Image 1: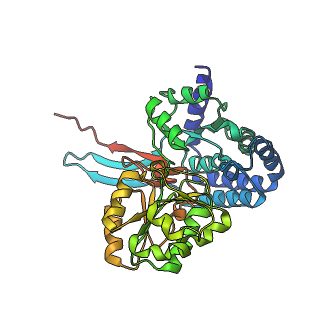
Image 2: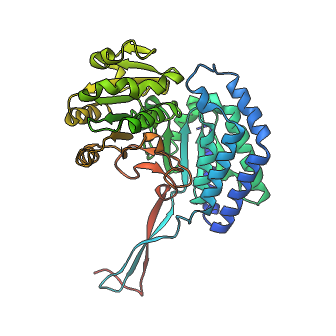
Image 3: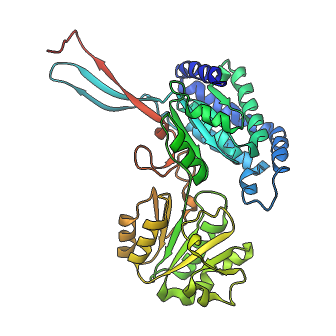
Length: 413
């Protein structure tokens, strides 16, 4: 393994990181946040190099792009992480056995967290802040599309760490190669947990290849059901926000399910999206309802449903009942985020009880599925699995625990 020495260094640094106080970690996070703002020109210059290699028509361009306001937002999120309570040292269970042994279960860092992600340079700072705050070292493996941005960001973090006398190996950036991904996934004994953040292809590859523990995140095939009792103006705003706020992120809307009794309102529901040139792939009933009324209309195919578009594209399917909508979500959703728009509480409660997803919304857009929006400071990813963390993963979700046992010489019979 060509990168084995890197993994060894990060593992060694993780032991030292665990000894820092929460106050020390917070001070360093605030210093990195200040550096992001004060030295944004160097980051934006590196980001411009990455952007120059990607077509502006690529839906990933927006996800790759950093701006002054986005960097200020990233710095703000890091400051928010710094002021959050430490997730470490929490006693989650405590008892004394009949034999006098005192048991205490306490939260601790995983150790080394490996992160694999694509054209998302903001993830570099988000992952560092959450890992550092929770006492975890991190090994980052970004995509080649964002390599210049990621390297400049990690260089800035290293500079701040060295100013505070902290081993810079608590965060390492691997080469942006497939070989580096493979080595991380086989770094048994060095990387304690791997979190892939990207599309279905990346996540499937990591899950099928890894010899280290993996938490699946990211892939989102997101549906919103507009019920027969849905409020029209509310639905317009929710659907437009869920689809067009940022199309390249995992919480963006992919399929609108509409009750057949509300097809006459479909034109009004989707009209705001025409301003963003959203292409609609509609089934026969929906197509007929808005043919000649919506300018970017195409017939849906079987592939239109169950697809994560990450683009200005939306599928529409007509359903005759709540149960049909639920069946569609069961068969096509990815367990990420689903929503219903209705003024009928009984319908909404049935939807929330039935839908098997990490986040289930009633009269709100799926665009809120985000660690910062949930008050978690930032996020390391959105877990779509059931074992372990589920939904936005932040500080508590990247900690584990250990048992501390105290006795007075007891022995077991």
